[in-house]
Image (cartoon, rainbow, N blue to C red; front, side, top):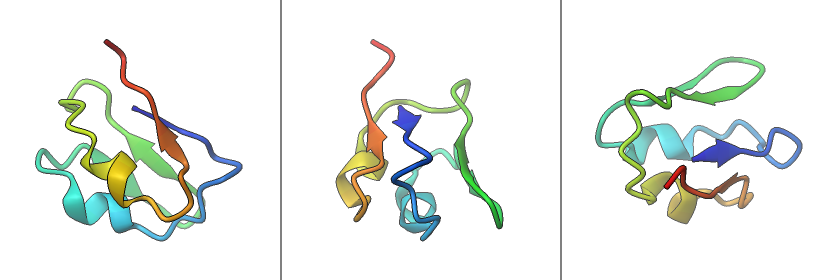
Length: 57
């Protein structure tokens, strides 16, 4: 999954729905740990800014 930093408003909604804790949020950005991400799409579906897209597959 990829985060478009220009669209992301750092709301943190994606963090709450990640089943493997692959997403972290700081004051300035949201980061997805690609090694932990299972590409379930939960974060993409919940993102109100539509800032998360795609899968590595």
